Image (cartoon, rainbow, N blue to C red; front, side, top):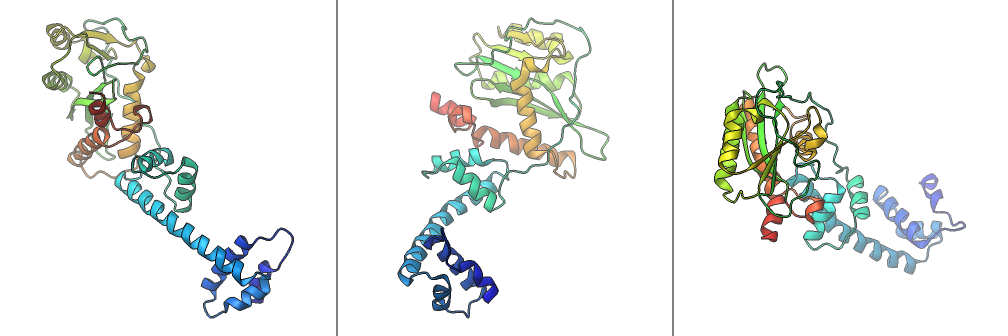
Length: 307
């Protein structure tokens, strides 16, 4: 016990707060020891000890509420949020807290996002000029002042280890609020995959006046069935330059986020299981996943707030 207590010996720069913290720690380690012994060894006045004991306990209680709320947020988001998004959620809930404190608590509680990082081979639907190639109307000007002004689309693939088949996801993202307004899933990257997605998007979003839909030069988007649907609805078609993924970067970013947060490092038993998890993720992404550029709101919340 004496060896442990040497750290309490009075010395230059020692402070009552630090001594009290050490004494509280030692009392837990040696429950049969007496407070008076530690106070004598540390040369700490009894009044100072109890003053700091109360302050420290109040601080612990205060942090406990925040810690419990952070744990709830991390659990609800399946560890997908880093400390900055957790801070935004806390502020939305009425907590007066900055990101530095949230980072400290998440480090102390081992709650920092540590998702498995990897990169899968990018799916390419380009088969040459098999139909109509549209001009690049967007030219990386990824802004929209209202819903149904600029839609982005693309196809990505998923493969489960040990399986021969793949699963393909075809979504449409409304650039106004980054909401996935329509999507389809299939084990085959057919024309029906993208056409059905487009039909669903138009059915649920009737106001397509002055709408632009932007994609890469994949065969789906050059096909006559796709271009005729757009012409019928007076929707302007835009395409990225050949082999230039930055021309559709918000769509690529969505695929990266989706795979990082719900696919990489996870164990899927079947494609039905994976399909179900993708559907749940997209619903969560639209309705609950907050974004910094949307003022701490989810895509759906932002759309409703802007209406």
